[in-house]
Amino acid sequence: MIVGTRTAVAVAAVLAVSLVVNFVGAGYLVGTFSHRPPPPPPPGVGFMMRAFPPEIRDAVRADNQNRPLVRQAARELNEARQQTFEAMRADPLDPARVKALFLVEQDKARGLMTIVQSSILRALETVPLTVRQEIGRGKNAMPPIPVDDGPPPPPPPPPPGEAP
Image (cartoon, rainbow, N blue to C red; front, side):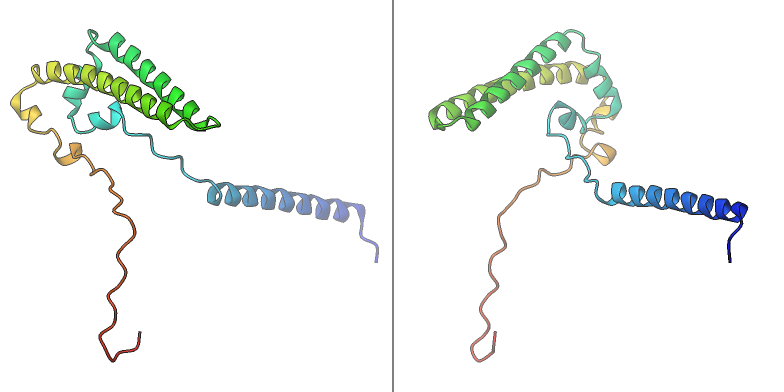
């Protein structure tokens, strides 16, 4: 039996639509289940500021006195980190150079922290006690810093006379 041209066109159209729907569905599933979430941002100034109520965070952000200093200190810290990474990738590895760059990086991080803390102190002087009492509590609570204590200890041996 020969199928009429109208029927053949209708069947072809339905098959084409079905194929498109299947590809869209498959793309959605692959995209949904093969996508890893982005890594969390590294702890930094923003992470530290989570402990403070919005009134204090806003005052720190608005501290125009320290804004250029914070930007410069952050740039210097980023540059120090890049130099440290380059030294770590170098062949041959120079442990003394890496150690020296670690110290530079620590110094730059300490400088940035000092500037931010001076802004925090100025902000604290402008808010009432009720706001300061919210620091680190409730929605401002800081999650503990994860500590990897290594692998768990092995289980104790079975008592004498019992099979393992």
